[in-house]
Structure formats: structure tokens, C-alpha cells
Length: 363
Ligand SMILES: *Cc1c(COP(=O)(O)O)cnc(C)c1O
Image (cartoon, rainbow, N blue to C red):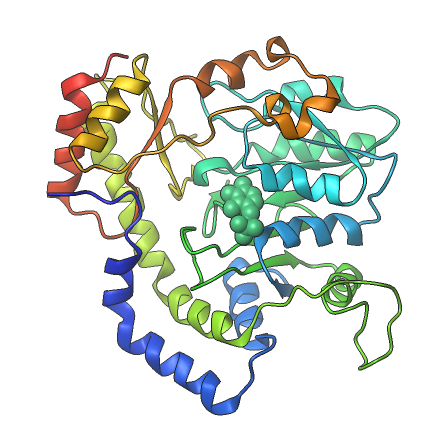
């Protein structure tokens, strides 16, 4: 029995008719550009006043920061261990990313390291809710308030997560979501969004995403073309209705993994006051290459999120960071493995993964 890392086919099979009907509706109306109805659905789900649908999650980060007035000469602080899109959003505006190390237990940005990273040029902090576990927002928000910095959440991995009972996506001034197909809420192509309660930022992001315009052929500034298209919006509205169910299945799968693996390797720890939505289930082992080869041979999908901390990748080499500046991110980058995680894992599949990890893991 193979165990897929992400099983988009199984998910599609379970919602095929609803999807066909939704796409058919878009085709019938020919409303191909924009999806205001999904924006309203998603804002309602997150609990913000506004949602702007965009072409993808990277654009959401780029345009949120551009709308915030971040630009050349500014610095923006984020985590060393995230997907490169977080830092690309900073680079896109002309600002400089400033990386801080992560907490060894949650893998999220360590709030205790923030103040040392702040300079007179710092404009914003971008916490990432990595793997689906909310970053420790209260201390981050406190530091930001003390220094007059904007907080923009990178919520690309955390649709439906909660921090102390509050919905991820409502905690910073803005939050950026990705609906890449493999995300917890995924489109059938690229898509993304920004959620916020700020009307002015909403207008600016919308205009930036549509040629600097909100009245046809009146261009207030040069923007770009990054809109959430109608078919993707219709797919996402269908999937949003199932998200809670899929999230509960992810959480249950994670609990079963943890019960089977806690004596075998380092398992994820969920803080007591958050809802971790397990975009990824990440363990640490000492013999990662051996484990991954074994899982591959057994037909079990696995991956590394992410193999090299961003400040040490060639893309950001010119910033001159050294590995010693990120002792935690650098250490875990050599040990982490992501196991299969999605809403269609059966107990039998999970138990098979547990057995095969247990057969070779040294941790
Ligand atoms: C996926 C992801 C993004 C980028 O989203 P795309 O839709 O692929 O552009 C940004 N940040 C994080 C943490 C992600 O996982």
C-alpha cells in the first residue's frame, strides 16, 4: 500500500460533483476574472471585514507589504526557516529581509530574539504560522507595538488555525494566504488572498492587483495583474465548506502519528493555547537520509520543509549571514522530515507509516 504525501486525487473524488456544478456556473456566467463571492466567504470564515483575492500567496505578501508603504531602505523581520516566498515579498518591495532564529519546540519565530533585530530602519515583522501552528503572537504584537512596527501574518500554512481562541488571519494588520493546490485550502491552480479589517489597505491592494485601477482605464499608480480568477474562486468556495472537516481529520491523523512515534523520534509539540491545523507533520531524526530512502522504497511520501534556512540560501547570500547566527534553524534543517499529511489518511495508512518510521528511525 502506497501512502501519498498529499492526496489531491482522493480529495477531488470526494467532491467531484460539487466542483463540476460550481465550475459549470462560472462557465455559464463567463465571470472569469475576480471572485467577489469567494472573497466574502473567506472573510466570513476568517472573521475579517475584508478579503482581497489575488493570483497567489507570494503576490499576497508582495502587495500587502507594498500597500503598507514598505520600500527601499526599509528592513522587515521574518523567520529564518520558512518558504522563500515570505522573504521574496520583502525583497519585491526593495526592502531588506532581516532573519531571526526559531524556537526549538514550535519551530516558529522566537519572539525573544526580535528586539535585538530591530534597527531604526525596521518597518514590519512577518511571523509565519509554520506547518499550521500559530506563531506566538502576543509577545510579537507587544514588541511591534512598543517599536511602532506593522505585523503582517504569513498564514499560507494555517487556514483555520486558532491562537488563544482567536482566528489566525485576524491578528496582524493584514494576513497573507496561499491557496496553492497542496495547501490546507487549495485551489485547482494558483490563488492567494489578503485578509484585513483596514479599508484603506484593502483598496490599495485591490488597485495594486489590477493595474493601479478601480475605475476602468483610470490608473492612479502602476500596479500589476494579480487577481483571483472566477473558476478558482468557485472551487475554493466549494472546498471552504469542507475545510473544518478536513482540518479535524488532519488533527486526528497527527494525534495518531504522535501516539505511535513519541518514543521513536522527536514529534511535533502543540502549544496548549493554540489550534495547530497540521499543514505538515514534521518529525526530527538523526538518520534522515536513511529514513527517507527507506520510506521512498516503501512507497511512502515524505519531504523536507525546508532543507536550508533562507539566510543561507544562494538567493540571500549577499546579505552575508553565517550559519552560527541561526543555531536552531540550522540544526533542525538537518534532521526534519515531513510525513504524509492530508484529510484522506486512514488509520491503516498512518499505522503503516508509524511502523516504517519505527523500523529505521534513530532519534
Ligand atoms: C506556500 C507558501 C507561500 C506562497 O504561496 P504561493 O501561493 O505558492 O505563492 C508563502 N509563504 C508560505 C509559508 C508558504 O508555505
